[in-house]
Image (cartoon, rainbow, N blue to C red; front, side):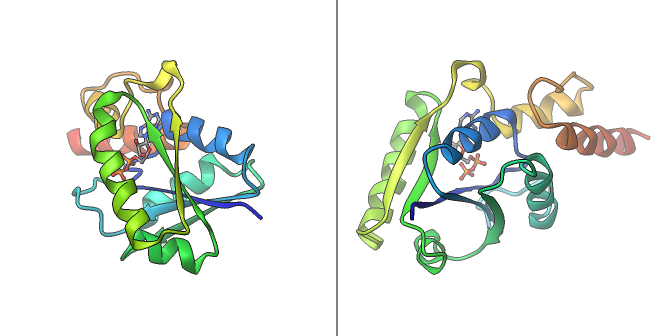
Amino acid sequence: MKIAVYPGSFDPITNGHLNIIERTTKIVDKLIVAVAVDSKKSTLFSAQERTDMIKEATKDLENVKVLSFSGLLTDFVRKNKANIIIRGMRAISDFEHESQLALMNKRLAPEIETIFMVTCSTYSYLNSSIVKEIASLNGNISQLVPEIVEKKLNTLFFNKKA
Ligand code: ADP
């Protein structure tokens, strides 16, 4: 059984993440989207909120499970009996950091493979920070994020301005 883990901060999930999730579900038996609780980045949304938004956005995908995790990713992968880590690759600028992570994870857990999914061109410019910035400036983000995220961000920034 092929069980993969797709880790990230997902602050919040975007259509770029969702595209990777949808494509991955077609090549594995089960995909665990793993929301990092103690992300190095300071997050706008709590781990619970980030998890709930992903659950809502992926509710129609049968083989997706959403969990949060803290501690070493490789420990989490092993605990969940998975053997694949999925990461998204947008541009060559992602390569250095991502390959460093993948090599370190390989050293920590040689039985786990990291697989990179190249983003589809529509979302290659997209990341969570840009989405937050556009939303905070009242821009339209409906093509960039799932509906639940659009609602959450608009409410948040509307209330901040009020
Ligand atoms: P992290 O803080 O671990 O980088 P992110 O939530 O920013 O977490 O991203 C999680 C994963 O999703 C990373 O592998 C990242 O490269 C990938 N990713 C982010 N945005 C996109 C996108 N627009 N298209 C494809 N992959 C993406």
